Amino acid sequence: MSISLAQNDPEVNEILKQELQRQQNSLTLIPSENYPSKAVLEVEGSVLIDKYAEGYPGRRHYQGCKFIDEIEELAISRAKKIFKAEHVNVQAHSGTQANIAIYQALLKPGDTILSLNLSHGGHLSHGNRSTLPHTHYRIVNYGVDRESETFNYEEIQAIAENCHPQLIIVGASAYPRAIDYSHWRRIADEVGAYLMADVAHIIGLIVTGLHPDPVPYANVVTTTTHKTLRGPRGGVIICRQNLASRIDRAIFPGTQGGPFMHTIAAKAVCFQEAQRLEFKEYQQQIVSNAKALAKSLREDGLRLVSGGTDTHLILVDLSKKSLTGDKAATILEEAGIVVNKNSIPFDPQPPSITSGIRPGTPALTTRGMREPEMQLIGKWINKILSSPEDRTLRKKMRSWVRELCQQFPIYEDLK
Ligand code: PLP
Image (tube, rainbow, N blue to C red; front, side):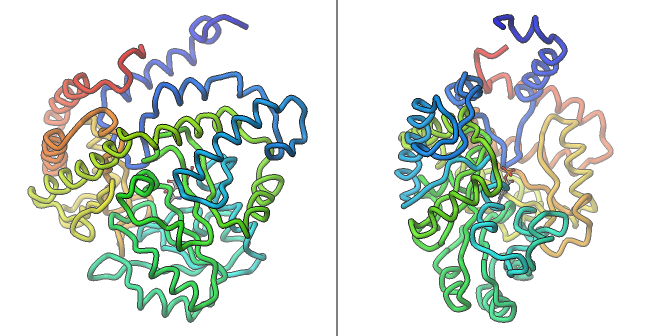
């Protein structure tokens, strides 16, 4: 029982070591990725993983839950404080699980969900054709305005009046601008729909006051805990008291079994971290870094969807460069710069190819990088994308990237 991973399973241990080196020696610009604290990692690998605890604090289906209840209660009370929430459920295993539970709690099969088109920045779990919600509900999509590439509320209201949704989802994976939730509340009220805000990406900015807060406007808010919030992989649901028991039942037993108590403890740790002054400074730096990176990318002639960013991410349109998002992401990775391809609004390319990339700054900001590094990385990205056939440049840049990464270790003492 007590032998180390290296002795017990050298094969897995070796892959783990290589992944740590990959993370250490490359620049992660995927906006949904981050490096949580050592405290979060520690509790994720703790004995809490051993315990079954179906149910909720004080109402478990298993014995031996005294400390488990304490952990979940602590997570809930910290979450209520940072989200200014009447009720929270901290058991969702992921952002997608949180969303599925909302549909289960609020809708009947065949009801209509109005959500953002995937290729305009929406998320798969909002009813994309290939997902479970699509088979149970009628999905209608809105998009962004062709000119401004931001939400056009008159247009969205007209779509809502036409399709009579029971649920409107506002939330995105690739929308670089701030969202004003008061418009969404008004539209939901006009058509008598529930309003759900999915803030998986921007929750860190919200809890530190750097982005408008949906909690006063939405009936339910879902989020992940592993992106800008910098906690463990997982989901959280925030709602008004009147929906609390429906939502709790939709998570367990509706759509999940035993909660991941190690992850719930890690969520509690990240909710505590999110109350510290350093966390607010960190979120401010994420946004300053995103603006600096956007400026650098724009200066060398790249077109940014909506012209720039108010958040942690940027959507780059590569169509004028005759490069696809797929090719761009591949050649950038060869140079040690890790981004993901992403559809842009009205993209002529399919989602597997795309015409865009979606760089974001949470992970590099955690490493301590600031505006000068963003300026430099923006120049490097432009250089690579301007010479897609230049293998030698990519090889040279791989070593420049490694040198920069050495100055900003992700975990100083991890080997
Ligand atoms: N909602 C949004 C807006 C997201 O961007 C994501 C993930 O990228 C999710 C939900 C799903 O989160 P998970 O991967 O934890 O299921």
